[in-house]
Length: 75
Image (cartoon, rainbow, N blue to C red; front, side, top):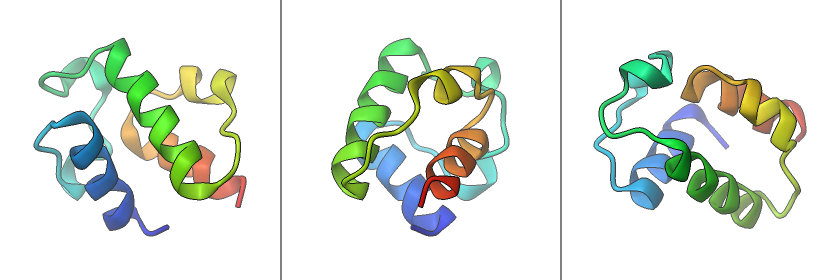
């Protein structure tokens, strides 16, 4: 999964208008982001990749780019 595909998945699943430029933005600065979005994204990532994603590592993530690194490191 490329970063562009990841960002597209984030937008599709959460309904947030995110771009690749937003990936490094901290969650506290990302308009519309909340903990529910994180759970939706985690579920979608597991469905798309066919693998479990480490919840503790995702919870430690401060941005979408951090989550992307967690997901791609497990590949």
